[in-house]
Length: 47
Image 1 (cartoon, helix red, strand yellow):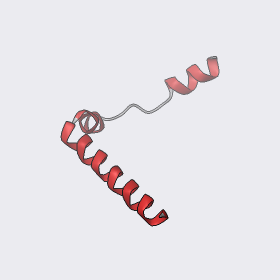
Image 2 (tube, one colour):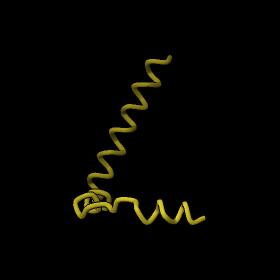
Image 3 (cartoon, helix red, strand yellow):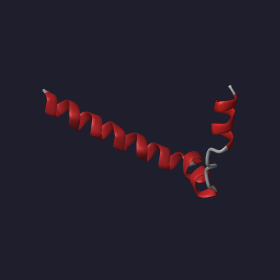
Image 4 (tube, helix red, strand yellow):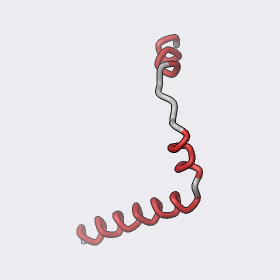
């Protein structure tokens, strides 16, 4: 388990800007909509 602990300890921490974007509801809603549109387009091409 020490290998896992070492990798976790050396993992980069998110910046303040990244954390704000992750907590922002409008940005999350926008990204959700974009992913859904991409899925709809992909499904439409397959049929």
